[in-house]
Length: 468
Image (cartoon, rainbow, N blue to C red; front, side, top):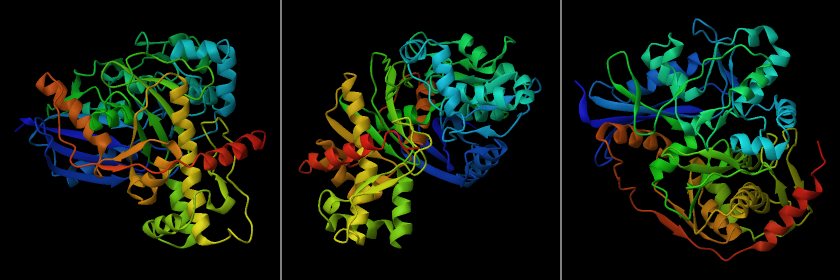
């Protein structure tokens, strides 16, 4: 029997799905579960549903849950036919095959400044619209079958309803703003851009936009499902971000974002002008290379994450001249989808585990320091940095981040903040008002600035701008 005081939040990320069951009023964690997703940049969405079912089971089921909400990885293209069947494996945000399609669409829409005015962002390979154009050009038979396009979170919300009637698809502003065919300023789809992306005039049914404090449907057992959100917007909810906070999330990708009352339109393409999960806006910068750089460091050095951190802290700022450009999986910001990583300044003196560890962590964080500076350039107020994600647990990360970003760094207790944000959204819709939950004790770091490290990094970044 449903309990009006219990909510469930889901984070369906690139690598896994997490489910938290919390008290709607206090946020007290009652139970939780998780399951993994297959690796890769495209995936049969059925794996997400199987993993979600497993994670919900691991969390003790939903029998007592009064409401739920799903947050998920942004941008992923789930193309559906008239019967609601998935036409081809979903192409994920981190798949860069549509890089040229992004260039073409930006040009066709009048250039970077014009597309940023229309949808808040300059399109890059991550955006759903570019993946649709790639499909239209490379898989025209599949493109011709498209009756609707869903994102990962709204496809899962739809599956919980039964997953047949396309009219029951729904989403929210935050996730829709990552498609490339939605205007976050007016909260309306730009179907003209969608038609251009697919190279056809035939109407495509798109998920309804649900207000952030409303329900969009119910599960087969009658549990109300809230609007859901993109993963970063949900994390902002879970963290209860305040003006002046910039959140850096260190997962598979690295993101820097802040909640704003006003929209942004960055023609340079550095900042994506997304919507948030409250009715406001979420200017965001994304890099493709974050936690996996630390994973690579453990593989290269044959050490654990804690051992890599200790090595890095035993070195000096700048790693005795060793600098890493961390484009191991291409890069989104700056837009270099075909780039590779570069070690520069290596010599006999710094060819040692401590300097390599330091350079790898600094390189990852330098890219995110550029991300924070891009937000500042657009007028975003930055007082302190809040770091979350798996890599936040590395002891060296907050210390070096404070030095590079020249601000206080705050690390909340380890938690599933995307899933927590989804749970809070479910509580908001269930209770009729946004609850305030205690995050617990946070850690604070303030380190002596190291601008010389950023200077060397930016020189390397700029000198390699024309490399493939």
